[in-house]
Image (tube, rainbow, N blue to C red):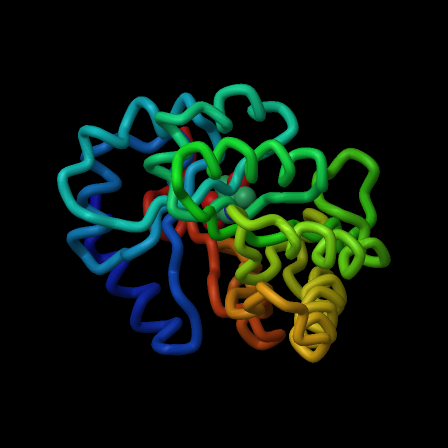
Length: 222
Ligand SMILES: *Cc1c(COP(=O)(O)O)cnc(C)c1O
């Protein structure tokens, strides 16, 4: 196991072009600790069950992002104990969820930073707001006091060839720039989260400033 070396390699490769978020689904607290020790500052979890398993056993400090499906885990995600420990939700894609999140965060006295997830491939089975509905969603969520939009996130369609995903990253970057230009009150277009182990280079070329890396940090998933 050489998480330390893998983290050094990816941090060196990415340099100051983007933040490297460790996508930690299914990994142990020890593995996550090693990654943080080697220089990782953001840990992304897809599942509340994983977060619950590792969070209190990870000794080193990091920022914790939720990068999984909001729709299927809404009930757990909205619990006080999880909202308290999550630093950003990257996968907000509906006003209904944002509204509930706003209420819960209000009663906690917390403003939750979020990214709006864009379904850049317009895939019926994927989460994310459709590209053409993104501005409207941003405008509505922007009015909520306890939810703060900090940027966009996208997955893009899966493909064996990383070049094939480029148009979807480009589309999301264009939306990001368009929304930034609108100067919507309360919206801060700072983070663009796109790209994974196979696609992060293309994502950075297209303007990503957060890349979510699992395999290249922790090895292949078991
Ligand atoms: C698993 C996952 C990643 C990282 O995937 P790798 O290919 O292992 O780098 C990134 N983002 C999300 C949302 C994921 O679920």
